[in-house]
Length: 110
Image (tube, rainbow, N blue to C red; front, side):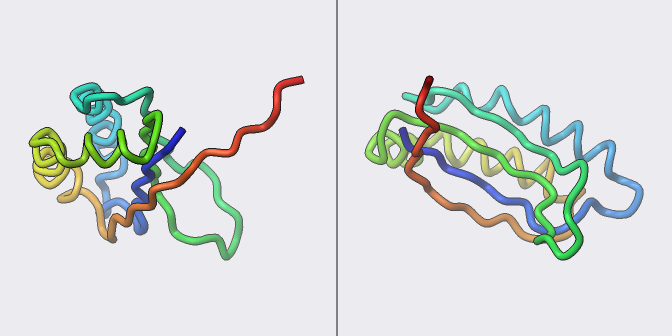
């Protein structure tokens, strides 16, 4: 399995936390439009350790392989999702969004 993570490094615009959280959650159905997607999650920070990176939220979406992820990102749907984030999420967020594509190693089942 292969997972792409988008890390929202920063914080909500002053007074916009609830609206930002709602818009982040509202983005989740858009991931269904990626061909071959297995699942998607949105993680929004609740508590963080002192000195931890300022990762406010993490979006994760999974595919069977690196090739499946790359194929999905090459579709026009990627731009649709990016445009929706730019319109609804990013105006409520002060910071940057960085991505990492990661191979998954899972805990063995007992």
